[in-house]
Length: 138
Image (tube, rainbow, N blue to C red):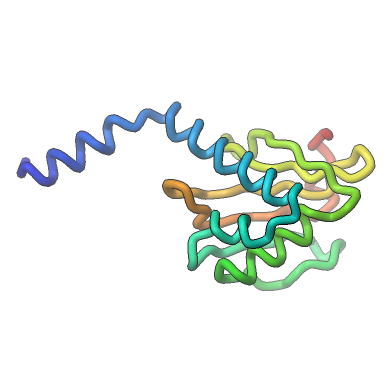
């Protein structure tokens, strides 16, 4: 193993799954804070420039039929959903990683799952299909 590859391996191996999970949770909490403050620019700063957001409305809830690409487009859409006046946001485990449950009047109206790298969100999935939200609590 060369010196450079050994240094990379040591750096990667020193990051435990626990520390990555804590970093991901901090990022998710920052997303919630930005949304609650209605800070779309702050939200955009947490997104990778090539971020992709896929929304599942199930044909029941109005949602884009194709994925949204790019930090500006994704930040605008998420800001609208997460900053809705009646929405309350809760950090929860979504598919084994920190995510966000959107609650309106005590009912889950959305679940946001994220894939991150470092301090940026690379990919996001927002489920707003009510048929898929029946098991989520607020």
